[in-house]
Image 1: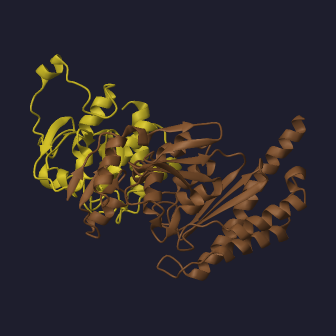
Image 2: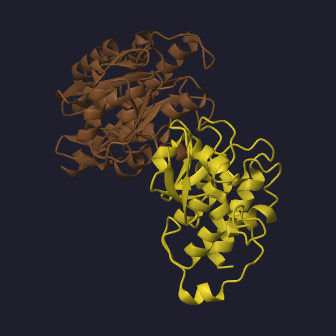
Image 3: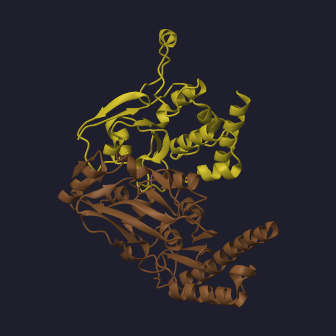
Length: 296
Length: 194
């Protein structure tokens, strides 16, 4: 094994071009487990922790450009107003020690269906900025996950940052597990209201071969909210609408039975989380709506 | 490969380090610092918790090469780290020099310079003893490092704060209540300036 230590992003791209099998390591919370357990013996290990750019974020007008290695602890502490869903998701990651090391870039690189960041990214809307010596491109999050622990990266590409849409409405995140800490999701659900476009987006974790959106459920809910004038009148979402939305979210799942839970439990739990996160976010939206009305 | 880094304020060098080796292995097997414990090797148990540039991390998940040039504080250096903090020195430990008067006043106190045995304890270590928070002791070093950092950041933690701060450290014997007591005790003593 060779330990490669690029001092800059350009150097890292050159190394990756020369050694496409090089395994990038930042927080190490996935890679080191595999090495410690002898599940993986990469020929080259490429340390990205010297590249300061990967640990920075910029808040723009519409998006946050989040460096690939910004640890979850920083997201929780500094980006809650802009990225509330991702901040909540970050808080459910493992433990303080892991949140101090791990970041979204690693979650995307590993592309586990159970990665905590994915449902929040899907719900908020995001693009993954990847680069190789051939050039830079942005992969929309919907097209990023291509299979179980597979993503759209080419062998010579590295994840540099993720551009996440700043919240324009309430966002929520929910995760099922046996404890509040140190848990791989049995399943997880992210939901974001986007009042500016009058749409709702979802993200489902650990209930299909890849993280997914419940698109049929979104379409149904978007139509129902529009039809009932809910975005304007700020009324409570009709229970039958919430139930239909939850059922469609459950139907979007394609889960497996495993040690953490059965397929049918996962489907059920996703439905429950869908209903709850819709209620939480919509109540918060209505609250804001009423405040605005009162002020006007 | 060769790795240089600072451990508990002293520059260290480890030779013949395998590229896939963890910082934990280097500390224990190459530098003779067995305080950080090796249990799960997957970041689940927190027994190997150390401070890396001031931040608590699982040393089993840090590749040795990633520690190059960094500052590490292990449980062996916790008492020194706490002392320096009390004197108002740098946060990450080891960054603060010894004054000439202090150096002149230094006397060997019977402490083993490698293991820290026989030396003074940090307040959080003393609190663990006083509260009976140590049973088999295997999880203790990781808990001490995590608890010490918590109190550094948040001198008056609520019970929920303590639980969350220690949520990455597993203990399989005492059932956590005495550990909670110990952290509350350390916090209370700290705020009273005892």
